[in-house]
Image 1 (cartoon, one colour):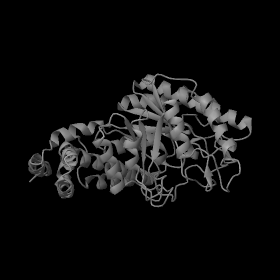
Image 2: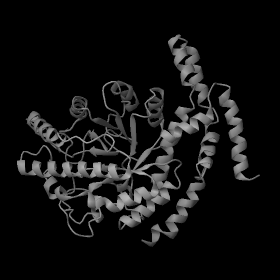
Image 3: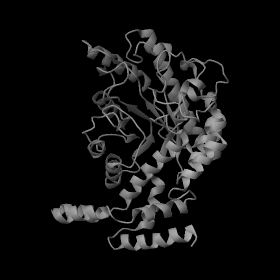
Length: 421
């Protein structure tokens, strides 16, 4: 029996099983088109090898290991992305840091970067028929050596980074204009203190002043969207981060920005999934940076664990797919880089497909009628439904490898491309 026939046969059986509990598997597959992931460019390797202006004054990506496959240039990175996108069902996006521009080996100060430095990326994205997102890069530079950027007490340092973020937002708007897909610009800064500070308020007021100037210029949402990202702590900011969750949450709501939730940056006993419905009534939308937090403030490769499953369920149950931006973030460079990115993306997609295969209306009605036993029982029975057969069929329909087939393709790419770099 051919594999395609076996997958279709298994899907037909799964389709009937889901139909009996009121779930339309074909509709769930169609809705997967709205689950769009933004894949990080920094997954390709240490950003410093593409940034001729990097000073080495602070860590670039902080990722452990040095597995083969680090990209030596933009064309190689684009080739890697083309390979990865061929293994991930659906049409997705690429998230760029500002230091991944085409600078032709010439140092360009970050407050002087321009849209022309990303023209190659724009043309490539249009050829691939995908969108691009953008990130300011407020690290790995002599002006970030103190551990402070937009909240630095030195006005010259603050001015440098204000101009940098302004330039990045202009680039994001130009990307949106030329790709005809809104570009999301995300802002994260490393600002914080290793020791307990006495005057936290001054630092946060300085950050607010910087942000007020940056966001005083508004762009059409058809061109670009703005998000701000907090961090629990980082190397050199173990005691306090200026841009805490509370700071950015208040600022985003007050200024109608998107708030970014990185699930690796909260206490491990907390649930980022629970925060989604708490924030949706008050925000312009959410950016979910999906990682795997092993300890508070840590990021590892995403797996389809309980936390990611809950996040997907809450997005789907809230009917918020159109309000949520999904991105992948940190990585372990001790693992095959392209392979890990494929695993992470497919893990997130599986979680969302599983959520879309819930009989949400029935579960909600049981909850309204206080039939808690029935709700609990149905939720448990869903765990043994033939979800894997639907996933394999979805991959088959999208022209991507079902099951474990992608592993062989990744290993072949390693042998034919990555190990030769």
